[in-house]
Length: 454
Image 1: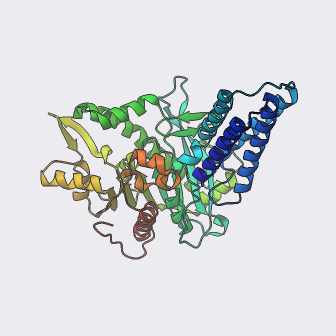
Image 2 (image 1 turned 90 degrees about the horizontal axis):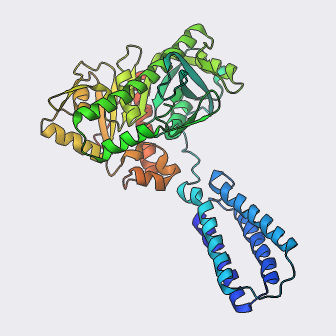
Image 3 (image 1 turned 135 degrees about the horizontal axis):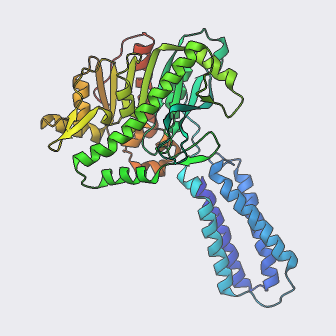
């Protein structure tokens, strides 16, 4: 629908220019008609708001603002214009149309990039609510700042809406870590599905690894440029294993510390039935968060993440208080321990926590090739040493198909890596597998099994 709206504007502008060229208006008459055309374009947008796919969300706000500004400027030009009987030049009329089309196209970039995605239908009995806080780690200094401030980790809660009516210590906890340049909403459909089925889900942000987040001062924190460039270099250049390990081990240390801190802070609040000094609330939601924590069963903790977040979940999943781990298409970098003579060394200690690995087709093919050639690939080693390990892959899938991004921003997701698989079917199937896995290992209901591929 965004494209249709844009084409309507293009037709209006071309029609206005063609009419002017044929009728040869004076400058004054042309300016009046310019105002009329701007008003027509604005009301065209207003009328089309009644159609699906066009709204007043962030996707169209720039367009709406542009249309209003154009009317305002054209009105001023009409009011203060002198009666000018000189003919409007053809070049000026054509230039006006071209500039108008370009400005409209630029303002509609969000509409072209993002869909009107409103989430997936959930299968559970509960309606889902959300709230948030920031956890401040008094034991760590923020390495990306120079002011000596402490590391801050935003946490976002998804939980059954009627949380105050739920018996204490009954809802399993699932903690999610996003991938590189991701952010906490990367898998919102997964959080909503779990919460609707009686889970508390906490999605954490990794500041400076996240696309953007916010600190306790209300400042927007964007992805660190050095981290971004390092990730791009490793993914696109022939970099020695030792150098890759040096960089990725620093990433993993930061993320593992973040997730460990979040678990510890939540468990401490759960034991005390009160929010500790670690909690910073930027809205009046203390009672809500306390209700969520009181309803949480901290003896049933699941970890989960996508890409680097999956790697984080796997490493933190060795904690004794973690009951289940899911890795969504992440190379388990936290289990690499060093490099000797150019070969990666891998943690071969048995992995005792039930572990599920979900991969895209190319990732799976690389893992099979490594196994065939007796190459020590970290995911293969960890799964082979897992006392209860499962793995599956989705045919024709890409890395971003295990997030909501292909549904929310298809063009961006395609740039980052998706397959030809139906995005909705992929995420719905994956969410069903995730729910079944946690139901088995966190709620002790049913038996879990997974197909080799989907």
